[in-house]
Length: 412
Image (tube, rainbow, N blue to C red; front, side, top):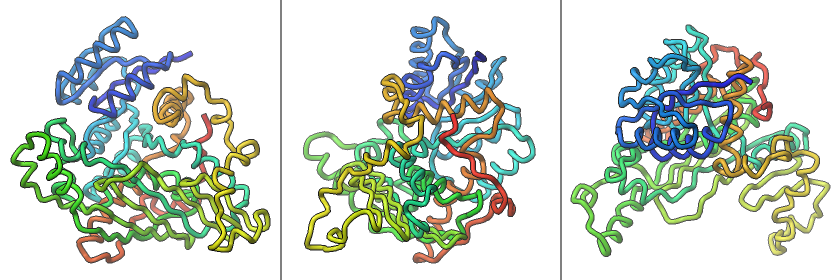
């Protein structure tokens, strides 16, 4: 069994958690170089690696030096959103395969450059969107592809996650989200909800996104949160006086070449429970993640059409469809795999990356996916600034979306 030697760049919350919780649990993965702009973070992980594997990897604060270590087979990037493309491009130019964590982009030129460098070098690149491997998302996708929902007309999703503490205390915690929320207003983190929908709708593989329209609410949640914090703790002056640009709720509508629409919602600075709100609507039925409910015309009685009657007896009935439609990777998941992060999604995403490297096969979530999904942030910012005007999505495949074949994320 071939062992993959990884360089790990970026060891904040996400980088630390995946390294410790997922990568170090894979026997065919070695971590041979670690890097973070804060040396203490890199040293902490190096110590953890030494305890688990018996060998301490070299530590760097400069990613270019980290990628000079001999024997590197690939790099995984967990840095701030601003630097994902910069590091990925540098690695691809050096012929080092890339696995990049997710986020939104800041400029369309970065999306184009990512694609251009990949096409010039043909260095493997995978966008590590773990939600594409979610159990609910894959079940609904399998059902959609078997025609149970009929012709798909609309999908929706959200990144709904109370991040007020993480954002407000970002400088103290050395987290990049603070500066983003201070200066930008956009759909800044679109891919958790968009990735699975894009796979279901065959985006970049027979279909594509043609336009992006966004509107944003006012920004009030972080201000009120900080005022509450002042009642029980000392709050730095810069935080007390901060005027955040990021609207509390950003609603984005995507139009697809196939005629489908997609609604995305960013909801991270008001009190709430976590949700991705993944929803699929078709001419013969629907799936709703919030209640894990399937509704199929002709299968479920007409009484559920009546708004006076409750559909509570349908809640969680999606489990009844798992036997016939849930992909095998979820049917066979082990307790150890489920413990690796996000209930198993992290394991499947990183396992897919490692297997594609070992077999030299195409990445299931590739550079064209990355460019078009991250571009939503750029276009949403422009749309908001223009009062909700639609923005054209570039075709990063240069027309090849019409003939590119589907690559299932369930193939591990």
